[in-house]
Length: 395
Image 1 (cartoon, rainbow, N blue to C red):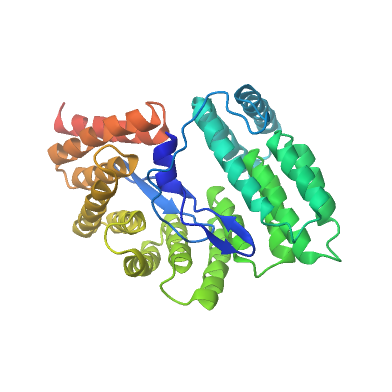
Image 2: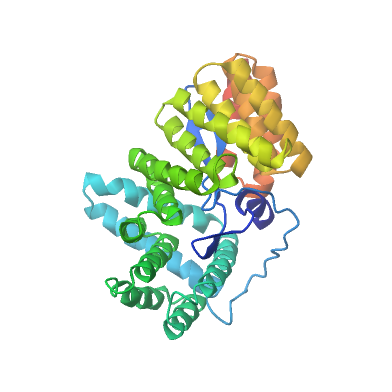
């Protein structure tokens, strides 16, 4: 599972405000009248999206970082957090349930395959420690060493306490305090404590309002939690910052536009979304050329927006281009290829061409089952679409 996740997630590494950060790619399902499309969102912290095939992330079941957090301890932590969220839900007011339900959903998804989610956690932790090592000029060495060691050992409360000490000294060292607040946000988000994470991210933005990394991560979490208008506000600031720094046709600018397109599409503002998607696609084409995952993703997103507007021929055109590109990049058996085939199946289904739709769904389903498992939400999406098309055909 990690190999395909890397190819969706991790981008080129570029420096932003002293930290090296990776692109995040997320599979998001969106519902329409007759079924489900699967669209890939680029939520890049740095705006740079590329394929990293061949990266070796072979997983060893009892892998630790310097004898730190074990798989068993990680799983126990997830289960404890699940119990906490369920208890909080029983007492929660309506305004708080949205966040808690998202937290519970994410916990449950990680518990479906704890080995894979633990592996992803270890890889993420190694990357975060490497990022923190870049901050030697920002933090006292003793505090930074203690925080890194606490993270290695899975002692996130201790790491949070150390960063809190730094944050509280904000009057003298605003930049340092902002970075400490941001790191506390990372710790809370990793622990599936999204309300706390958002508070820390917004504190970092308050201290350094012109930092695009802080603005972007706050926006991504707001989007994830369904606060789309506020996410758009942050994404617009990120875009303005990157345009000022890089000008047009830079990966950071293109990714910011893609994120704005995704947020507007989720709000049903499809024409606005298409405007952002088209400009993102034009930039990615100039930067990377035709057959690149970022280009395929942009075309996939455009296909989804045009399909939502009922412009099925345009949707098919973009989906077919995305599929052809992803086949060249990944070959037959890859979740991105399965995603493209599912989405083509959905358009043909909406046109009443059920046999064509079934053909695409039948090609997509085994790949999703192989890489994601039968219980993954995206696998279930493809299975539901296939069942619906067969029922419409009378099978």
